[in-house]
Length: 269
Image (cartoon, rainbow, N blue to C red; front, side, top):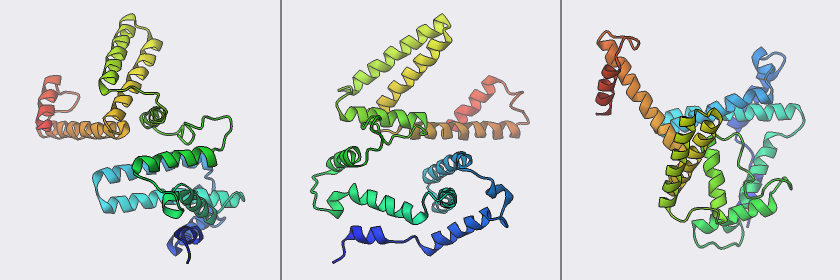
């Protein structure tokens, strides 16, 4: 009887995916698009990141139609990178699919092999152990922090790093200790501001943000998503201010702070 892992390893991309890849090859051909023909891997980085954020926005909005569209945009960027790699003889789509299938099979021995696990925490522990012992790529890098991308948003990267450190016991014991650290960092920032020391202000703000990220982790909150949510809330409320001022025939430049504060409170209600 064929195992699930063997089935996954041999599965080929769907015809629709291959059709999209063929479309990209056409865009890259001499008869294709001049703009697409000149794109390089480094050019695609900003588009890839932008599309990934739009996927996150679509998830937050809860619209399946928007999510489908944004996933398509992200997939296009991924396949574009595959097409570039094909042209250079580095790898192809089948190699990408086989690679990720093999990796997921290795990291789920409780599903595809005979490993037993008691709970989710043990699944996570096995995942990290497999990464460190079987898939560590750089002998000079830290196995603990391997796989945390330098390109992640700063809040997400900080939270991932502190979570990894916590796994080996480098952490506070209680939430109130993290809050005390935040208060300490805030006092140090106030002193840097009083001294008008620009370099110290930057450092202390960084320390304060890092401590808040730790508090987010203790509260089981994703700092990046929390800030994204608050930023969205700010934008919605300020857009309300803009609409109401327009209705009153007042421009943003002409509006007083008191008027904007009044409308801000309206938007909150």
